[in-house]
Figure 1: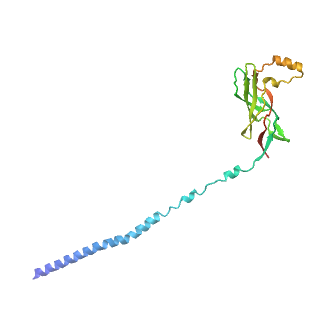
Figure 2 (figure 1 turned 120 degrees about the vertical axis):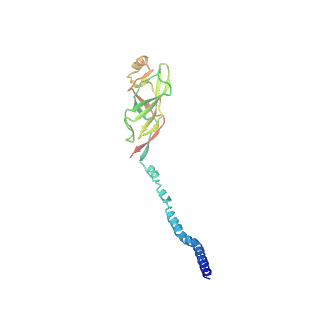
Length: 203
C-alpha cells in the first residue's frame, strides 16, 4: 500500500515536471517573438543616415558670367597702315626656306584715332615668303596683344628696303652693291597692312 502511494506520487511529480517542461518550451517562441521588435527598431535606426546626395548641390557655374563681362572694346587697324618691325634674328637665303618663321618686335606704337592699338615692343611673328639665290623676301604673320595672337597680312619686303636712298642715281648705285640674300639681326623694315585687323583695346 505504501509503495503504491509512493509510486503514484512519483508519477504525479513526473507528470507535473513534464507539463512544466512543455509549458516552458511553448513559452520560448513567445519570448523570442516579444524580443524581436526591439532588434527591428535598432536596424531602422542604423539605416536612417541615408540622405547624403544633398552634398552634390554646390555646382558653381558663375564662371561663364565672368567670361561675358566686357573688358574693353575692339578697334580695327585699317588696310594700308604702316607697321615698322625690328627683326630679332638673322635670315639668309642659303639657310632659310619659304615658310620659315622669325621673331620681330614692333618698333613704334600703332595708333587709331589717337588711341594706341598696337603698343611699342609688341611681339611679332614674321615669315619668309620668297627665297632665291640672291634674294630674300619676308612679311609679317601675327602680333600678340594682351596674351593673344592676331593674324596679320602685309606686303613683302626685301633686306634692301630698309635702306633709304636720296636720289635716283644713288638708288641705282645702291641696288648694284646691295645683297638681298641676307637680312641682318636688328634690321628695321616697314610693312603695310594688306588687310585690316581688329584687336581689343582695354578701356
